[in-house]
Image 1: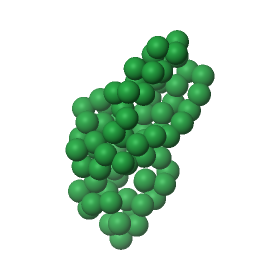
Image 2: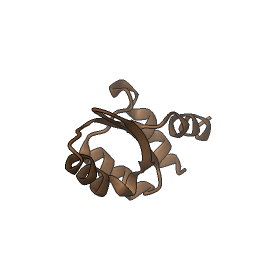
Image 3: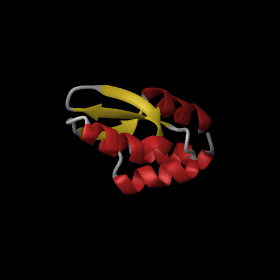
Image 4: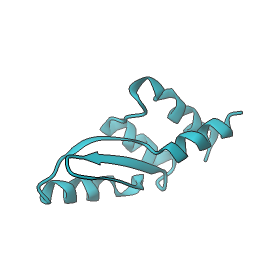
Length: 84
């Protein structure tokens, strides 16, 4: 994890580490394999950021919706240790 990504992850604390679409695109540019937590109407799962478009499409086609997307606890902990 780069220091740039670690700083960005920690900067999202006030939003509960939840991400907007624009922020997800930033994460993909910084580290496409960064794990994101997806909370949907009927399930939750984690996946690399690079699959954002594909998974968003699949969830919708499956009749579900994405409630929010955030960083996983492991990514948050790694960001904290990276900057200390």
